[in-house]
Length: 137
Image 1 (cartoon, one colour):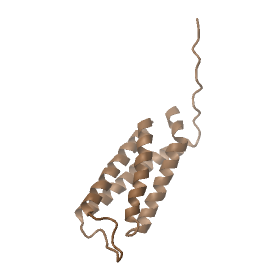
Image 2 (cartoon, rainbow, N blue to C red):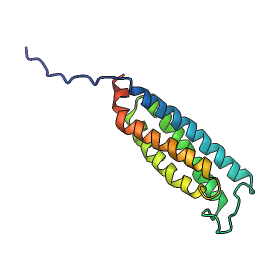
Image 3 (tube, rainbow, N blue to C red):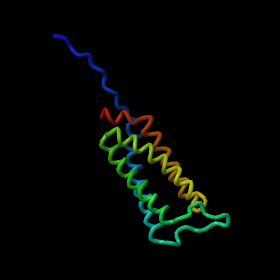
Image 4 (cartoon, rainbow, N blue to C red):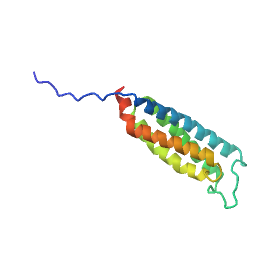
């Protein structure tokens, strides 16, 4: 009887905690995006115009964009918690899009935008570098 060659199982290290952090941040950042979207949609005075103008031209479109990104971040976070590859892929893509969208907020709310950009960057790092370890768990 011939035996099938087996591939070694991936080793789970303490770095897998980065992936759990990434998944938690995906859900948290998604909820922040949803809150930001609801404020933009419900409060017309949310965006403060600068002398040089605001990058955002239509506050409703901006709010719906944040709402969609927030929902996708939450869904991706749930996928990462489940150990699904699609969750990691969507998480990286949407976190990168979130960074780009936060650039539109930067002139008006620089501290908020910078915090979200830094957290999105950590999420991308965690999911790309250490994501495979969670599949092994």
